[in-house]
Length: 102
Image (cartoon, rainbow, N blue to C red):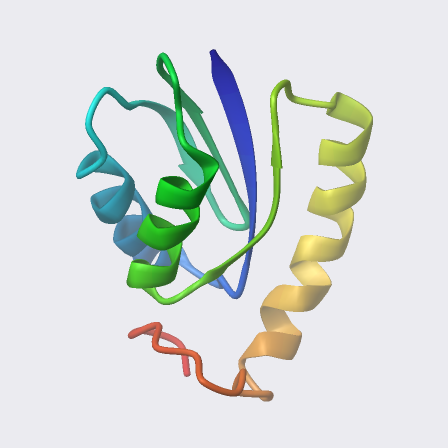
């Protein structure tokens, strides 16, 4: 089963690295891609709560977990992600434990 994870708070390659590192710790998970604001993983019986805990451990927040990649939503998300990237450098998220950009 493939899952697409929409993640808030990621702003750079270091954020990507932190999320990837935590997702790699999940048993039975194959990481297909991790980019700013989004991760795609594959595996059997993937537990959304464990995925959320892993992303939280990296210091970010899961906004949505989908079964399949919706390309239209992806393009809309990419359009807004650039704006969020610059916005995030000036507004530290309350309680954010990410390491690199804030």
